[in-house]
Length: 474
Image (tube, rainbow, N blue to C red; front, top):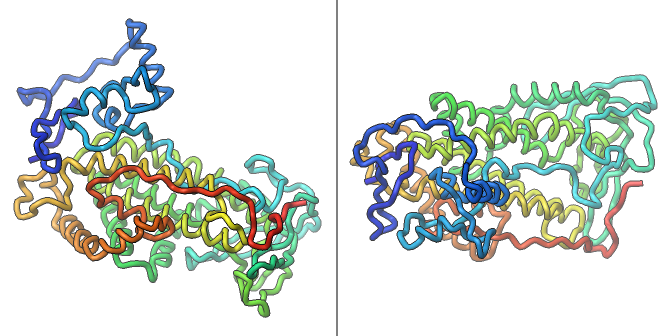
């Protein structure tokens, strides 16, 4: 039986069966420990140096979760920490020593891949408006995407192009590179666009979710819908993190979507109606410079501040490691890992669109995003491994650490177990052939009893199938 731990260290008593463990308080009397006094600076020079080294290397997941000192191994400082080595024979943990930190995980891309940029007006991301306009008229357009049925409205204006601006949309048709001309229009006021984007995401996040979930796997639909329902009655801090995560999810989806102009004002452009190889056949594309502006609006105005907030608050919930918080940890981990798979698949398709021989259009981002998946998985398994709700006898729910779970939550866990069993063969094939783009490559690892971090094979070459270099701005 697993008992919820206090805020002090716990130890494993029964190590004969790592799948059935017992955690007890180090306070044998069972009394609440008195509040800890604020610690001052260490008087011991060696302790100060060890603390400094740990901050540089980062504490491992196990030491951070148990709130104990993570001492580096003097002979291999970046390897398995000395603390984990000292207790490894006691089987206190079954996960490897991993120096992961949730608050540092990468959840979204910033910028474009080299060779796929649309302009070099902004050497670094900055909300700086264009000043050289070609016409005084401000036009209002509607921008549609494949993630929401409601368009985003923007105020735009015709600008004077510079050599560093790309004015053509490019794509590959077999081994032939093709182009489509666009008109030079850009967002008038970037800060105003940030506010418009804030209002749009806050207002339409759940409309977007319902629209995006259409046609998705039943397991995915049920999990996202249950997460939305759970948010309405979860503890306040957890409900807040879930609400922020949904908004972050919508913003990340917009960075990976294909957008086009919708409505009467198409900025003097006609939709492509003859060449069916064109990715936006029958639709009017956004001018490339405007696409890069929207990237900066999303990244600087929304993703950076909200992403930091979500990761820090989620990390607090995970580090508390309370049974009552398990459902929030499970739901956010699942949705983050599924998002990782979708971003991976879309990045793969983007590489094909531009005729790249490498697997992904943005290999560095994919590498960082997959590492973030390992970070989420490591923390999830640490919280779940001692007592997984998917392995409990719910006929004796009152004897489990999850006795406060509602019957709806238990039903969700049981239905999830059934759906996972139905997908076991697919999970195995996905892992065997390293199908990173598969919807379940990452979420399936949540149900791997012997989980270990997995590396992604990344290719960085710039070769194209046409044997020509990527088009450059200017």
